[in-house]
Image (cartoon, rainbow, N blue to C red; front, side):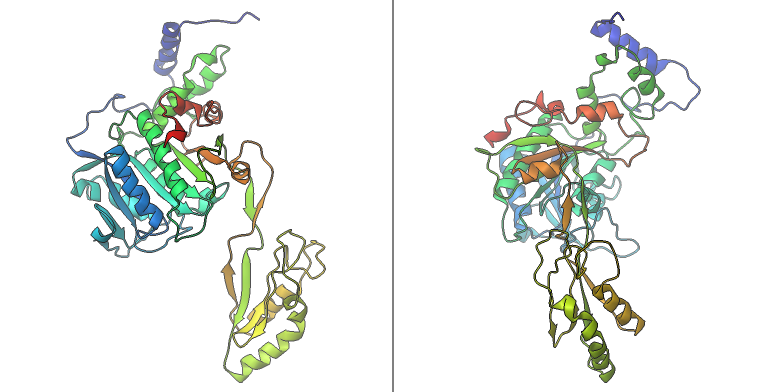
Length: 447
């Protein structure tokens, strides 16, 4: 078969023909030009997190952003820790917004979730940026204490805040560290976040967000999954003429893509690698420590006596190693009540993993049947992973920085990019950063 070669001008004509050809379906297009004149407002960087406004890492990043970019930095974060809040909202309850000058300039605490913070900041009519006459360039969330990889992106308040900014039409970035030491300022994660932010701002031309307030429903033309022109165009033999990198940059500028950065706790630019990744395969299993709280009544003592023979084997099991074979984390009988030890595998005494009823869950059932509460505490540290090449999970296990390009919109949404476009987002440049950002990037290791 003869290959068809086309000039850029011919390719442009073809793309216009596909976009402009009359069709029976509803056609969605831009409601503005690519370059938008914004009202006279001071540009700024918006910064939030889910660990709370007093996070040392948050304040460190804010200070370094002000110093290194010269931009005004607005910090709006939860008044207290809101980890694992995902995109949760506070509905029909007042949220107090307080200025915190003791933590730095332009710093505000909101009695809400990370998503609440971004929405309060970016609301087009009553938001904090409108009140201060500011216009966002980019929104950042983090650095978070603990990684946000694989399915964590569905649970993370850090990622939720970045995705919310995208929904409002603002380019955004989520940042996390594998360190969980909340007294640490996460210096290497802050440095990596600052470097990637500079690269992202260069891709944006250091201009205010062109799509804030978001004023279009969908970006028309090829590259979108549910636009007919995309499906028809990508089936053609000469579909290589589409500038996929530019489609990705445009989507990032419009808030339809965002970046998810994860940094190993001991990573250093001089000896560590950077990898462009997808989301890895990871899930949680047996995450709970279960207990029956202490009761002072004689009935409670009777209950504890009835449960003890059934639980003693599980309680006295040796400490587990998290290998999924049913080894227990252990437990104890004390004045605080009966501890129902949760296995790091499946809690089975014989550890054969066949899912049969155990003494632990038998004890839970008996406690509930007798009308006593059972307390579940999510330890949240029992991740199960699988070896998937080019995934964020494997990059972090190898001690490398992971950068993933994620879609802002839910799967199946009109604004989702096509599979062909998103597969190109997995390509990396010679320095490991996403190739679609590389044309406008700075050296990651220089910061």
